[in-house]
Length: 248
Image 1: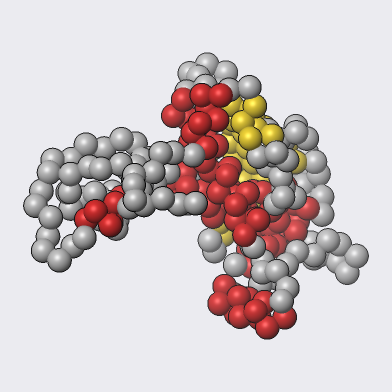
Image 2 (image 1 turned 90 degrees about the horizontal axis):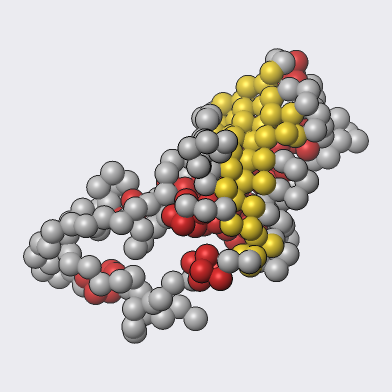
């Protein structure tokens, strides 16, 4: 959507000065959910539906498609709204910060004291905060920009009225998901969000979940893509897979 690209162009061109914080408004991580066993419906291959996930007895709510009564809130299958909406909005935060090929270096969960909510820290000193806004809110030394689907607000208002000039940084302008995909097949250029960018955006979501689940800060090396100094936390970067459904 145009609003996201324009907001990131404004941020990347210094319209709000130096970026201090970014708030990303997405929901919580998934949790362990225990549901009573129900008969498996005729014709439904429940074992294959589970795939590599741990075995649990069938329940229709376990397999539902809606968040409130479905698989997306259950830790065995999902990272919750942190990975659901997070894949969209943390992606925009990374784009606006120019971090598509990097990422944060530290994730700190809330401690009930100095840290009220999950907080990320980048090597350049910018902090990214989980929650506190709709969509994404960039706060800088000279103003603020909030962006979400169909929403673009700036403080002061004149920031949003400033055009992106011919000598300013211009970001990739996609004609739409499908059109961009087909055009990149024809031209062999990379799409707006290729696999590397998608991986980096998803990594931000997963790292936040790991910190929340373990209830302790974790440090991350974006270049090596590994958790530093915490072997127990590093084991959460992968998970055991139920045979024979192995992902190699």
